[in-house]
Image 1 (cartoon, each protein chain N blue to C red):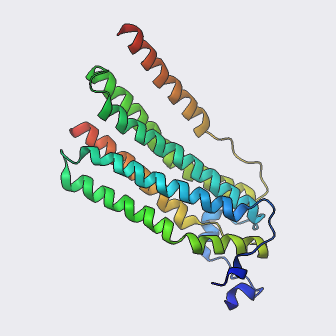
Image 2 (tube, rainbow over the protein chains, first blue to last red):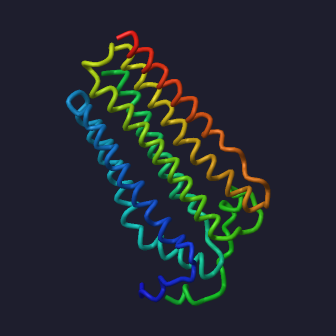
Image 3 (cartoon, rainbow over the protein chains, first blue to last red):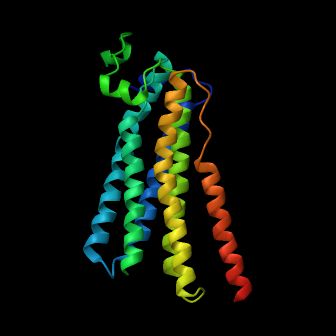
Length: 109
Length: 130
């Protein structure tokens, strides 16, 4: 994608702020999933699998950043931005599953 | 990148239309702001999850086992509720934006407030007694 395609006229810098918001969130997801490794001595494979799944979600969010920025910029220039239903739902689901898993591990350890 | 230059917008697929509750497309800035707000709630939820794990893992010498478990469970349940609530709120806001309705009240905000208060009270009681 040419850099010119990423220029826009939004003085509120919405595409950039949204991009950074996703970056902060995906980094935090990875860090918190790392916290869960605390249970690795008790439930090795399950915890490792959980961490890897969270890492995949986090990496997926990072890899698609450029595409997301392009969408946001196009949204601003065209005055039409389709809400990211799938990504939002996937991230919320990942967080809920991770928390539920933490509760289960808390209960059985 | 012909898709960037073309002015025609793809029609919204039926399933998206159904989830978003019809209406007309709002200002893209509002949708992006809603997305960032959702992400903020998700980070809050993740912070509570981290807190729950940390309390369980790092306070073995500080709290009685029951208190430790109680604090961790409250933090984790709160985190799960906020994670699910973040998505619900995102969707409800998006629907309101599309239909020019007033934005829904954030039910997860008092939930977070009460949860934080409960945790603090438990901590104070524990510290005073200890």
